[in-house]
Image (cartoon, rainbow, N blue to C red; front, side):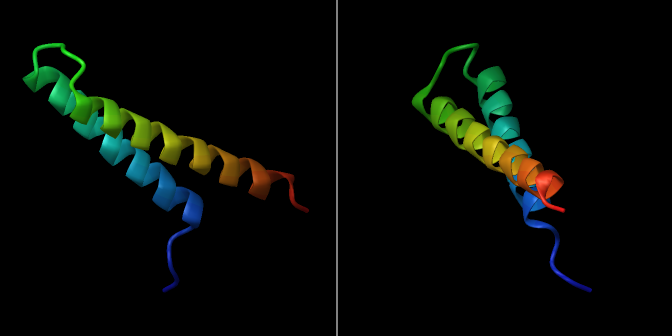
Length: 61
């Protein structure tokens, strides 16, 4: 059993951080807290890296 693909790991991390931001959004009463802002930023960075890895793998022969 090998390690999971790197793009899947980044996609899962993106979902976790965006999920944390959504949870904080519900708790904080629709305010943009610094914690939520950081979680969203980290989540979007992981999502962008995941999409980039998928694009690179798709373009290689």
